[in-house]
Amino acid sequence: NAGVTQTPKFQVLKTGQSMTLQCAQDMNHNSMYWYRQDPGMGLRLIYYSASEGTTDKGEVPNGYNVSRLNKREFSLRLESAAPSQTSVYFCASRSSPGTSIYPPQHFGDGTRLSIL
Amino acid sequence: SQQGEEDPQALSIQEGENATMNCSYKTSINNLQWYRQNSGRGLVHLILIRSNEREKHSGRLRVTLDTSKKSSSLLITASRAADTASYFCATGQGGDYKLSFGAGTTVTVRA
Image 1 (cartoon, rainbow over the protein chains, first blue to last red):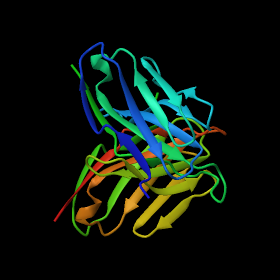
Image 2: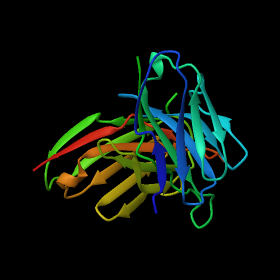
Image 3: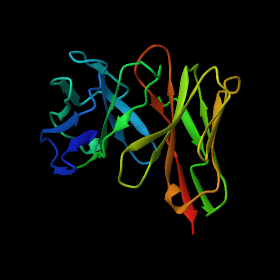
Image 4: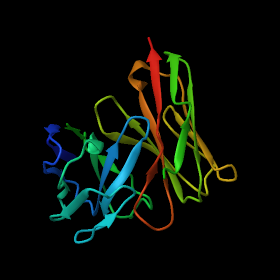
């Protein structure tokens, strides 16, 4: 049971290049999230998908696009990378409320992205 | 903008001592969660407290919530080297699916 898997783990891009970060979960969760983590700033939500077929902007969506490919997969795309997008990107997933009214989020181990 | 702010930013303690960290937030919440992040890894959920609860325990963890002061604390008792990590509070508001994370407290447990 792998949980949340992110690929790649590391990537270096040049300014202006495009890139898709992949995320897949095997827990049959409905909701999925993309965050970025910068030093001293905690996690900031980029986009989320409350359920398959829906996506919504988070706190810092500019420069990013997402695709909820199916229930398992949620990808994040940088169309034209900028140095300000150098960060660690985390994908997370969460089940729908059931036994727990507020189910916790489960995180992947991140993609470390450097843009030169 | 981020909802939660942790205090202190960093904490260094001796193995066996207790570690206490605080989280303050700005707007009404329906739940507050604490997560741990080991170096180079993703966040792991530790404990959740609902807005109508004042205290919860889980193993060596104790969480308190004071909604009148918009603050929470996480206590780790009898710390171990394996507790070395960053700890984040996250708040949930309304009926949506989102969490707002603070900037975290980095805890170092010295052997």
